[in-house]
Amino acid sequence: MGCAASEVPNSLDNHSHSDTKATVIPSSPSNLLNQRFDSNRIVPKPDNRTDTNEIIQNFRLIWLDKNIDELSDDYINSIKQLRRTINTIEIFHDTNECMGYLSQIQNEKLFLVVSGALCKSFVPRIHDKIQLNAIYIFCRQQEKYEEWAKDWPKVKAIFTEITSLCDMVRQSARQCDQNDIEIKGVSSLNQIEPAFMYTQLLKEIILEIDFDEQKEISNLVEYARKEKEYVNSKEQLKLIDEFAADYHKSVDKNKAIRWYSQQCFTYQLVKKALRSLEVHTLLIMGFFIRDVHRNIEKLHLEQSELIHPSDTTTITVFRGQTMNKADFEGNIKQDGLISFNNFLSTSEDRRVAISFTSDLNKIGVLFEMTINRSVSRTRFARISEVSWYPNEKEVLFATHSVFRVQQIEEIQANGTTIWQVKLTLTSDSDDEQLNILTKRMRTEITGTGWERMGSLLWKLGENDKAEQVYTMLLERTSNESDQADYYHALGLMKENLGQYNQAIEFYERARDISEKTLPPNHPDLANSYNNIGNVYSDMGEYSKALSSHERALEIRNIALPPNHPDVANSYNNIASLYNSMGEYSKALVFLERTLGIFEKSLAPNHPQIALVKRNMEKVKKKI
Image (cartoon, rainbow, N blue to C red):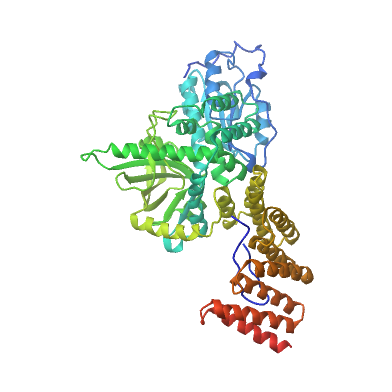
C-alpha cells in the first residue's frame, strides 16, 4: 500500500485528496477487639478516581465489620475468591472512617457488606447515597434483622455464612458488568445510522489480523501488570502470571472462553476495550478477542452437528439487565434492531436472568431471545462445559450480534414491574440487507488489519482514537513503507481537522521516507507532493502550494501516460492556485490542458468535462 489516494477535480477553489468454597460464621463481638490489623490482607485505600476512561471496573466492595475474623482460613479463602472478580475491596473496622471513604466516591457503584452489630446505626446514614447499589447484612441471627430490613430497599439480603454472601456479591458484580454493555438500537433498516453499521465491521477487522500470539501474550501481560487496578491485587497478579505461563502452550482448545468466563483481568480488559473502543486496550486485547470468537464459532459448529432430526431446533435464552430510561426508550423500539457491543452472556435459566433486573434507580429489562439453531448465521454456543462457572447454563454470543425486537411488555417479577423484551436473531432478509450495507461501507475502510481499525475509527468520528491507532502502529513497525503509510494517514486526518501545520509535518515525513525507499519519479511521490500542495493552498500559502503541485506534475508527466487522469488533476490543481492568486490567464491555460485530457479519457457526457468548461467560463470573465 502506497500513499496514493484518489483525486476528483470539482472546482477551481476546491481540491480533493490523494488519499473452591469455604464456610465461616460471623465472629462474636468479643473475640477480636484487640486483634492486630493485618494490612497485607487489605488493598491500600486508593485516591478517588475521577477519570472514568481509566477505570476498568466501575464498582467497589466495601466491608464494614469491627469484629470480623480476618485471620480465619474461611475468610481469607472467600476474599481470595472475590478478588478474582472484584478488583477493589476495602475493609473497615471504624464507621466514621468508612463513612469518610464513602463520601469521596463519585464515579463508581458501591456494594456494602455490613455486620449485624453495625447495620441499624450505619445503614440509615448512607442508604440514600446514589452510588450505593446494594447492601448485604452479615450476622449470626438472620431473623433479628428481617423485619427491620423491609424499610431499607437497598438491603438485598441477610446472610449468616460467608459462602452464600460471597456468591451473592459476585453475582452483583456480574450484574454491574452486564449493565455496562452498551446497546445500540435502530428503528428499521431504512433508518439505520452509519455508526451502527460501522461497528459491525469491528469484529471483522479483528478476526482478519494475523497475530503473533507469543508476542501479543507478552504485550498483554506487561500491560496488565502495570494497570493501577491490578498492581496491588495479589490475586489478579497471580492470574496474570498463570496466563503468561500457560496460555500459549495450553492444549485446551477452549482456553479463551475459560479465561474470559473467569471474569478476571482478561474479561475486564475485553469489556474495557469494546465498551469505549479504548485504543491501547483494544490493540492489546485484539488477539484474545479473536480467540474467544473462534472458540464460540468452533463450539457453535460442534453443537450444531449434534442436533438430531427429532430434536427441537429452537432454544430460548434470557438476559437480565437494568437501563436508564433514556437508553431504554431510545434504543428499544417495536420491530427495531438492537446490537450489543460485546460478547453477549445469556442464560437458559430465566430465574438467573431475572436476578439481574433489580435496581431502584433504573428500569429492569428481561431480554427473552428465541433462537433457531439450524438456520442462525450468528455464532453462539452453550459454554457450561468449558466455563469457569459451569452451573449457570450460560449461552455466549459473538460480539455485536444483531436482534430484531418482536415484543415489548411490562411484567411482574419478584414483586416488581420490569420490561420483558422478546427478541429473535435477524432473518435472512435482514441479514441480506445488512450484508449489502456492510459491503458498501467496507469499501470505505481502507488498508489492512489495524490500518482498517484506524480508518474505521475515523469514519466513526473518533478522531483522537484513530490518531492513537496510527501513532501506535508507527511505534510497532520498523518497515519504512508502512511508516510512510501511517504518516500519510495522520496527515490526512490533521488536514481534515484543519490542523494544517501538523498535516504538513506528517505529509513531509511520509514524503521523506518515500524519497528514500522509492524510485525518483514514483507516482506515490507525486501523491505526497500533491497532498502537501493542497494543505498549503488551504493555508493560503499559494507560492509553496504551487511549488509542490508543480513537482507533483513533473513526476506524473514522467511516470504516467500523457492522458492519465492524475495528470489532469495536477493541471486542475495548478489552475485553481493561479485563480486564487489572480493570475487568470495562467489559470485558463491549465484548465484548457485539464479539459484536453478529460475529453480524450472520459465519456463525452462525463460531468467532470462540464465542470471544467464552467470553470473556464468563470475565468474568462475575470480576464
